[in-house]
Image 1 (tube, helix red, strand yellow):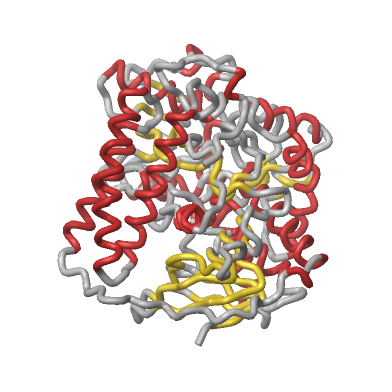
Image 2: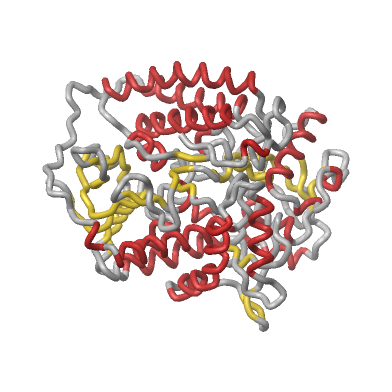
Length: 519
């Protein structure tokens, strides 16, 4: 028997929970969390959320900064809509229980790379965690919202004519059983796909599940070549995916090479506050020139008490690894961080499949273009979640339960996978392949090699999928392999360098490619 609900939300980060709280006004909501409800990329977001709240700033400034970072691919009407809505969505978050840092004059604002003004609201240096915890608390108090943990969506369920999404097959990771969920509207909010790369700032579950499911269901996917590498992840053998917030550079921290030279002024007029793609490529260049595996970030010039107060999370985490950031330089390296592409949507989060919406990082909305402006992502998640709910509340009658029998999950003759070492090996091979050939700096030769190898790996993975019973590792492997294919194909289609995507065979911007890459 299928589980029935008005709204099925796949993902428990900011986009999913914000939508749930808004949608609960006019329907029942089930939220699926792949792990615990707090295991999300939102929880790991340090810097903050961008919004114009200061008299010294303006919507036009924020719009222009976003368009400049997006390198000609932002949809201007979407940018204007998001920037204009941002203060109201900040108020929504406050109403849901989020506490942003304040001074006697108002919000305590910081500045990050690419921003012309201080407009980043934050909660110390753990803004995402503060947002996540507040929204979880608000959802748990709402009787119309049901959160189910350890539930991994396998594939979307389509109507018989394939024109509508009517729900999803979902694997219970505790019982290993697959159940059908049906809904008036299904919302994909599964986050990004950083785990397709060997080094990433993302949480372990960021395997592009929503994008992969949407692609298999026939949705349009856009701009997968634009994967943003965060310039500064902590480089330490015992540290896994710990981000050193861009806000440190917003407060004056300086990138230096192993001789102590502050190199960013050689790459961009904004120096250490240049857009992320510039900074990531600069660090990559410096590492290749020197032969070192990392560079340094220096914030030792600030008073220790100021650093500890402003960045308590970064200070404590680094201290665990023997690095006192008030005295020591921080070893950092770029890592896969944020996907600007994803499932193509309109201004309401609608996809080209009726009944299916996409929100947050797994969506391509037109806000980020070829490169996301720092801290616009949390803002985007709230705006589109709000828009989707406004649209659904006004058009609820168009989203009815489709009166069709949903076929139960059928494992056929599949047997238990007895050699997990094969899956683990393929996991590692996909991620190493993407890091080596489809990383910060690309070339035609590397991309073509990657395409040939990923095609062979995908065939192997499909064989595993159909012959063995599904489990989390196999499903995630299937998804990252498809994400890798989409990324490689998109990168090969873009014969220029723009924003995050840099190909040494096409090093210049080409006006003929000032459009989305759609698959």
